[in-house]
Length: 534
Image (cartoon, rainbow, N blue to C red; front, side, top):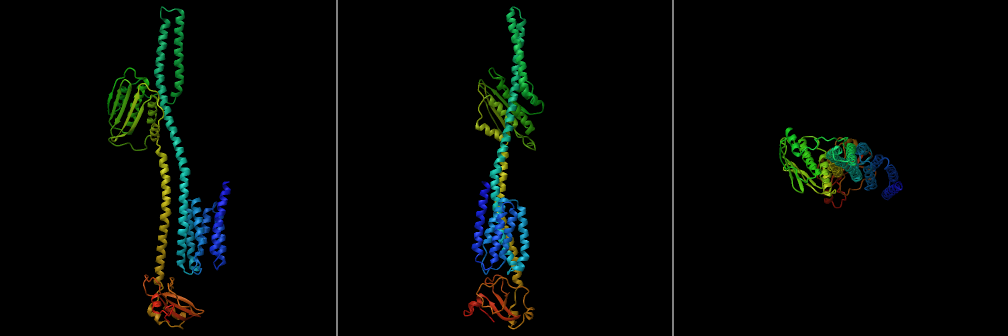
């Protein structure tokens, strides 16, 4: 289906371009133009999908048709063919080097062809170069721009989704790691309680005043507690295998801060004592908030002073850890993966609390509100957005912005490059025009001394080496039968907009007529259509 649609599109384009060739070139007096146009169009469209650069080269070479003289008719079919093929080449082959090579080769080949075949010589090359710039380079850049936009829409978003999925896996791993730590805490506290149960059961088993049945029940209780402790160790041990606890079991916040101070961290703390009714999970969550915050300060803001506040009330524990800006600035290098904050957010969520983390007054602040009697909170959009920011969601945004910059750059190239090339063409053509203009001037005294009947060889000493390419913009007198005319400039400046010229007509090697062709002369001699001065 897709292949058939492509074939239908190519066929429709080919028929449309061939129709333009027939309509335009069919009116030409040169049959070869029609044949060349149909062949070039067919060949360019036939290879445009598989070999877009070859298709572009064929269309550019077909542009040599503008070097010929068509009696004032401009062949427009070549412009349409070149625009269509160049756009498709830019869309299907957006790499610039092959196109630039083809453009340079065709432009260089066109110089000798224009000098030998074109009636206007080097000026014909300028016309061909202008056609290549506006009918080839500009559509090619436009096709490249459209292709890059589609690539950004197709591949850029897919890449962003893949990166987001990868980052979500990182976040999930960090949350699972924090749950593993929670399981470790549960093992330590629950294992301790089960051990106490086993000890008390053992004491009952040997205590006096109990009958045999009660001692047997105490023994079963001790055995069950020991078995539960062992099973707990096995289950939690699977989780703890790759993530052994790094802090002392049952360490308090004060003890943690004392260890940090001993390591050289400047800490000012206000920590309330534990109160009755505070769940162990909330206590460990508060400990983890302080631990992770102080660790981040040491890693990312060395030397910065830290303030820790832990306020415990009857129904809630609030933790705030703030650091001032580091004296020497942040550490160089890559930023952290922020997995610690992800895990911390998961720890706080599981006790039904909320966590906020972000810059403040040049430093950083982490605050947590931990209720004493709350179920784990749901994943809110705000928390998910915060975790997305922490895992670096901006990475995909950076990739998207890079793709957008490439597209904008391509659009700018589509505008600037043709203008620049046009400026180069105009500059080169202007230099050549001025060189030819002043190199074809016939002085008025020499023109006055020229007489009909003189041979071309006799006049060679006074005539300039080159002829005037720019023809006068007025009606010329009739050319004598069998004569060939040459045009030479007057001593008027380049600002002479009617391009007045001296016309010398030779027949059988002898001068048969000379004319001063000028708008001023024509106005001064209304009966003479050419303003001739013989």
